[in-house]
Length: 298
Image 1 (cartoon, rainbow, N blue to C red):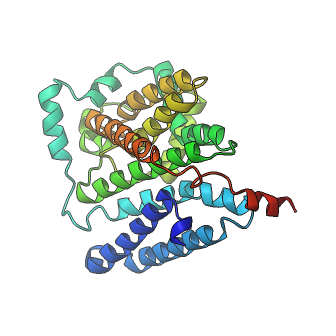
Image 2 (image 1 turned 30 degrees about the vertical axis):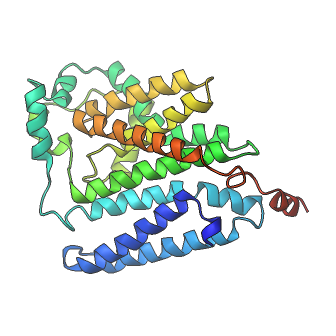
Image 3 (image 1 turned 180 degrees about the vertical axis):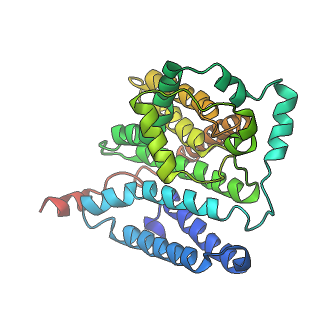
């Protein structure tokens, strides 16, 4: 199995195994520890199946190549449930003290004071783009017979998220919507359909915690980094969307400026590291298997 594993496979396997070990060691701090361990075991089993079946045909190859997107949801949710498995409380006071030295008014409060319905909607277009950026960049690269470029995008995304998940557990923060609630004197001005969609997602899939660094920004920066590397036709559009996302994350009160900056650095670092590592990659490691294509065509 080792030879068939990608970086994303190995990173996700390590995440779930380490999560099981951490939960087992600190079970007294995790109320739902039996359920979390069970979820991790199931994820380990699924990844093993995807790795083992990836060469059978193109359907299994597709499932193997794209399954990390589903795992990101599981990992993000789990990290929020482990916020206090090591630390005893939120660590936002460090970020608040830092930003108090840089800004006379917290940026999220200042933006709220100058908001309007049209500003809300424009920024929500950028924030919503996060949910499709990886699909756009990965999807445009995936049809290539040589999928090393796609693999780098997915591997860098996994690496960036793994760093974020570790930070969420080691340095749990809840974000300005909670810590600065008394300073937000009124709700954000309503926007249009994108504001509604982002609100719907956050109400049903949002978590309490996981603020520093911004995983949304990290993942978006990875996508736009590789758009600049490989997709010149869309790189400017995606860059504009990511800029709106960065401002929108603060405007929407999900993140501090510190979260956004840290997320961007994590995304850039992960993309750069995977790019450098990929330069020594053997051509055959991520090229579509001709034999597998032949079998799937029968």
